[in-house]
Amino acid sequence: MAVPERVQATMQRLGLEGVNKPRRTPSHPTKSHVVMAKEGNVYRLKRFGQQGVTGAGKNPKTAAQKARRAGWKARHAKNIAKGKLSAAYWADKVKW
Image (cartoon, rainbow, N blue to C red):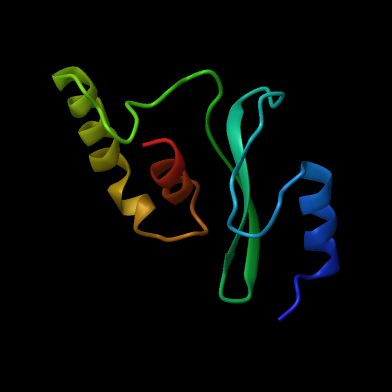
């Protein structure tokens, strides 16, 4: 199935390379990333991540970073489980 024209126009305007491919948005006032999420036949533009804040990363080194990462994942577990159409899913995949 081809990507709808309006979705393609939005992706081109935002500089997205494809569906389900997140991109940083350094000029956005509040959100650090954007992605055109697709699940089934549903397309949604998702902005996620707080601008200027780095997560504990994928490989936290200190106990404080590990606790911060575990706390974030625990707080957002229900939203992460909703799948690709949730911002928490993308924040978990990209930032945490």
